[in-house]
Amino acid sequence: MTTIRGTSETPTPSSHAAGGDKAGRGDSKILDAAKQFESLLIAQLLKTMREASADGWLGTGGDQAGARAMELAEEQLAQNLARQGGLGLANLVVSGLQAQAAAGQAARPSPSAASQKLQP
Image (cartoon, rainbow, N blue to C red; front, top):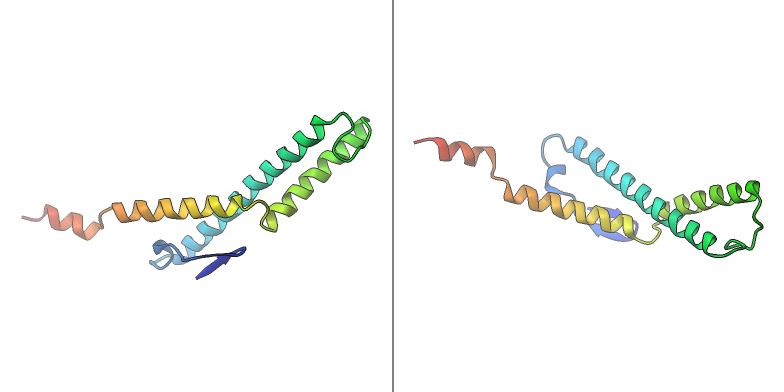
């Protein structure tokens, strides 16, 4: 059983099949992509909050250097928040993709069952 930041999930059936190491790397890539997606969403939220106020969300002025520094700080904050669990969106994305993959495998007939149907 694997744990992703406070949520307990069971491994997908593909992780126990031959080549489970590849499935584990696939799960890791999915989690990484989901965290990057969440990071982008958090960064966009922070940027929108800053732009909604004339003085920015920290009350900084409007010079270009300060604006660029704030953008970089927002990106770093968003990445760190997402890495620590953020809003929980990454876990929802991973859970949804794993459920979809499990449903797809359950609906797919096994190769041996297909060959038995073809035999007279």
